[in-house]
Amino acid sequence: MAQTPSSEARAGLKLISPTAIYVILLLAVPLATVLLYSVLTGGRGTVGLPLTGENYAELWSKPVYGYIMLKSLLVALTVTAITVLLAYPVAYFVSFHVKPERKSLWLFLITIPFWTSYIIRVSLWFVILGYGGVLDSTLASIGLPPLNVASYSILSIIIVLAHAYAPFAVLPIFVSLEKVDRSLLEAGQDLGESRWVTFLRVTLPLSMPGVIAATLIVFIPTVGDYVTPELVGDGKEPMIANLIETQLLKLRNFAQGSAFAVASMLMVGVVSLIFVLLNRRFIGGQK
Amino acid sequence: MKKAPLLRSYTLFYLLFLYGPIILLPIFAFNDSRVVAFPLQGFTLQWFGEMAADQNLRNAAWNSLIIALSVATLSTVLGIFAARASVRYRFPGKVPVMGLIMLPLVLPEMIVAMALLVVLLSIQIPLSLFTVILGQVLICTPFAVAILTSAFQSLDKSLEEAALDLGETPWSTFRLIILPLVMPGIMASFLICFTISFDEFIIANFLGSGQPILSVYIFGQFRFPAKVPSMLALGTVLVLFSIILLGFAEYMRRRGIAKAGGKDSGGFL
Image (cartoon, rainbow over all chains, first blue to last red; front, side, top):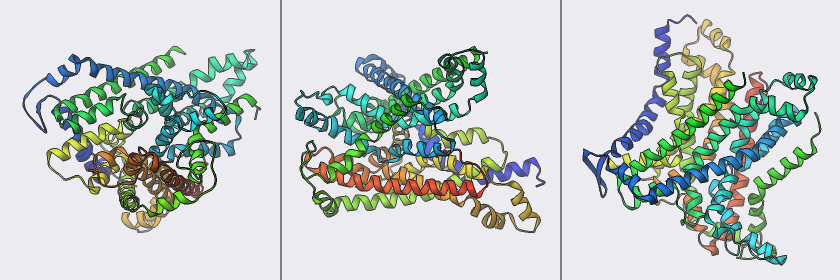
């Protein structure tokens, strides 16, 4: 079609405007509001001038906040590491050892649990790990002592999150493995390298972008997870999301809650950036 | 294909781990004991009866259905606009606008919910099912855009040009040529958004102001041991329902790819 660039630009802008206006009003404006509130002086249910850095100072000065942030970070990183390590061989198997026409069936099987109710999956773990639950009653019936996993809140939070986000990790790794040029592997082996060395020197580096993507996809929602600490950890081990909820809704301290939200976004942003930079460096180092 | 028995059995174990808790759903939903533990006691339909008789549960399910249908419709419509614009046209500000639309994918859901909640409370908009819909559309639109973008990308541009050359208007071209071709993508997007919305908890909980919504109701009931068996019965029904919907979405997606003459590369995302 003969279109001048400006008429094309206008048509494009017109077409995207409903969606754009929606996300600007309901996403960009709220995020900007949170940013603004975080530097205002807060009262109960109100915010006002003057501008202040006190909300952030509060975050630094009370060790309990730092502890919760650090705990969320460590839990999320542990979950991410477990999830990605467990998922890699699965993605590798589907990419390299499954017939092409069967691949989408395998992927479908792996992704189904992700599409079934998150609340039900998490609640089921509560039933499995909880006091007198499925795990302990099974152990008792074969004469073993109960493990009482649920009393180790952080451990059970990690187990549940690693299960809940497992399928997220398989897909991006699979996609990057699919892109690996198979002739490179043959070349490696023709030149006398073992399959294991070929994997370490060719396949693994080439699949790193997928691994990094998987890391981010798992890390971001786990660090902000609300349901699992609330239900499985019995609320005894709050994470960032629970902290933000307490400040905003229970204490109705909008300014302080906003500061927590901004701080946690910053934390997520910084960690994500580190992963992305690591990836770039890793790829650069292969040349 | 090389055989890899070790990797294969590992993958099967992994699937078992993924499905483990879900397999427990039907087992205990039909188990004749209020205590969810092995050994099994006997077969019963009592929990399904209890579930069906629960008036609060029916209200919650009805609300969830209204929300999910509205969210799926709105997200898919917004998704069509965004996906079509980004595939078909070049325009200034495309990267930041698309970035903003896709942002909820990389933002913890809690942040999206809280940001929206702060604004709603500040301008004193009462929380309702409507505010839940507003919030969930933000979460679902990126999925709709992702699915629809691949649908629009597989369109052959010459079909559209031919229709325009033959005297169709841009709108009738869209309605007669493009829409039917991307219909499977639209259906897949609708079904996926419906499923996401139906299961969604964070926004339903915080922007719903205690309205009975299914995910929120389930979350509350699991705290009462006496209620657990009927929740397992509900879970069994929901999982079946999800699998049927997803199977259908996957079927539509494949049909869409086949229609456009493409090759299946697997997966929803």
